[in-house]
Every structure is written in structure tokens, then in C-alpha cells.
Amino acid sequence: MTESLARLAVLASGGGSNLQAILDHFDALGADAPARCVLVLSDRKAAGALERARKHGVEALWLPRDEDHRMLAVLTARDITHVALAGYLRLIPADVVRAYRGRMVNIHPALLPEFGGPGMYGIRVHEAVIRSGARTSGATVHFVDERYDDGAIIKQAQVPVLASDTPEQLAARVLEAEHTLYPQCIAALCAGTLSLST
Ligand code: GRF
Image 1 (tube, rainbow, N blue to C red):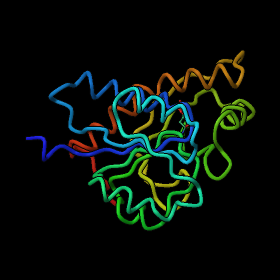
Image 2 (image 1 turned 180 degrees about the vertical axis):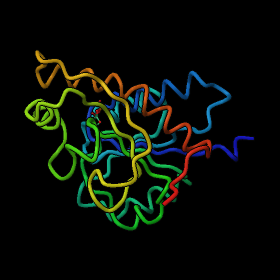
Image 3 (image 1 turned 90 degrees about the vertical axis):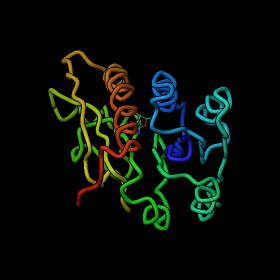
């Protein structure tokens, strides 16, 4: 029975609150979970995400930046079927993108195609949204391709931008929306009810 279960790897550079939301969502689904998270990989040794993985009994692996070329071998050695980027700040090696096309997703803390691309991460995204005068922001889940924040959009969740918002307040509101949106998208992808149609 467990053989048909998808095997998910989560790639994260930071604190890992989205990772936690994914782990909690799969736990809550119990026997109905369409996947098991079996690997958390980070380019940062001290990433909070690695600590969260260890606490959850999931393999936590630090892959230093100059060892990116090993990523595909690391994933295939563990029979990883799906990959979710959750605050992973490096560009994914081309051979990994190719191998996992349609099975690798990312979440971005704004409504793509606006406010994405190289250098648009963390608080900078929310600063740019506020600066633009936009009244709505949100989170975007999309397939991963060879460029930052560029692949086909899967689903978005919207949140209001309040006139009084600081970038930090907006970031917190978006992050809360991410924690609902992302686990649901990943579960659908792993269950096979979501696919890359282009
Ligand atoms: C999230 O805002 C996500 O959209 C972005 O990086 C952040 C990761 O946060 N890609 P966390 O480490 O999951 O808390």
C-alpha cells in the first residue's frame, strides 16, 4: 500500500514555517495523506527548517552551495517523486528541473507575475508591493522551471494590503495564507489531481 505513496522532498533555506505547515497537514490527513515527506534539504547548515525536520523524524540534509551538482543524485537515491521549494533561495540545477518538471513546485509571497524574479525574496517583496500602491497581495504556488518565479501558476490566495501596513505586517498576513494554500496544492499534486498541462 505504501509503495504507491508519493515521496516528497522539501527544499528550504530559512525558518521552515511552510515546511511545518506541510508536515502538519500530512499528519492531519493520516492514512489519507497522498505523500510522505522523507527529506528536507537545505543549502544552509543552520536553517531552522533542518531542525524542524529532525524534530519530526524526517531526514535533514545540508547540501553546501558548492555541492549543488549532487542534488539530482541525492534526490534519486531516496526515490523522491515530488519536490516542494519552501523558501529555498538558490536556483535549482537544470538537471533537477528537467527530471522533476511538473513534479516540482514553489511558493512565492506575492501575486505573480508581479513582484517576482531574481532578488525578489523576503521583506523586499512586501516593500515593493506597498511601494506600488497595490490594494491586494497574496501568495502564488507555481511549477518550477529554469528561471526564478517563472513557471506555470497553479493557484493563488489573496490578502488585502491595508493602508497602515508595514512590510512586516503584510508579510505575516501573506505567510498565514501560504500555510493553508501550499499544503493543499502539494497534496493535490502528489495525489495526481493536479498536473502541468503546458
Ligand atoms: C515564504 O514567504 C515563501 O513564500 C518564500 O519564502 C518564505 C519561506 O518562509 N518562498 P518559511 O521559511 O517557510 O517560514
